[in-house]
Length: 416
Image (cartoon, rainbow, N blue to C red; front, side, top):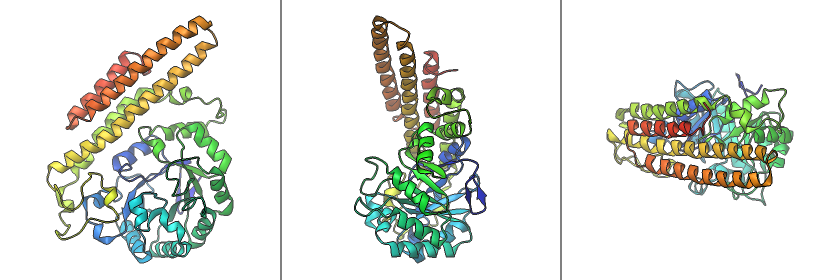
């Protein structure tokens, strides 16, 4: 089991903090589907941004499953320490420091992965934050700024010496962003260099890939980011594979992983959609009326605004419904896409099985049928996404999702 301070995680797969994605409803969804820990979206350490709607929404929620973790981002040691104290005072039980974000606006402020270029400043920030709170402090990094300055091992040793209690490593440099191969060898070197828990991160999109990465790097756990978008069931699949002593990554197929969850998929997606509307609808206007009219909300946190607005624009009752609708569009369209991918993968498996049994003539006929089915499914998904993105109320969105899954079940595309 992975131990972070006083907290023992009940699994080896955790959710990565992602700006604009890992809000409270999505965190709840991932915990429900097996994530051992989830972390709230990163919040800027700048106190001038503390009372914006965006920042208030990013505080830990008392209903979050323990340990309640939140990530902070910034450039100044004293400001980061104060931000950590602020987050703990609002319920955070673990404070994570972001030194891995590759976003241009964040790095331009010399925050996120830009900090990896200055090991002295890294040490100052880590010492300041660890010394400011009585909860575990963790760190997320990349392998370095660019291919000529990979220093993940040095940063990891600094982190351990400063009292950081776990480390997540995205296996790319900042210059690589999300392109190119993940450096699992570098992650393995970090694991060998420190005694604290290390989470491997980067391009882990299936249970089989998670097990392969764990075996190859020796990491204590995996941190799932984009692989969970539209597919929170990945955590349950990873748990099932790792906890099944008779399974192997070669034999534990996508079909066997998904047999136990397909019947509940529609219900959980509908639950997630309702939770989005309930959460943002319940976020009262008064919670951010405290923001002074002359307070600037521009700067480091602008690129993280979920609604696409900054400052005090559109602060009215309708903004919450509008925000919920917009966030729902993002998540539900990911579900549409993942559903299509799952169906196509299953069809391909079925075709491969039939190929060994049929004659060449039969296989050609089957291939034509599959091509027609693929085109139909792609068309249905694209139409569903387009229509969903035109809807502007909770009820309309719920009805559309129910209709979409109803059609799939009618045609036999989703197992009962």
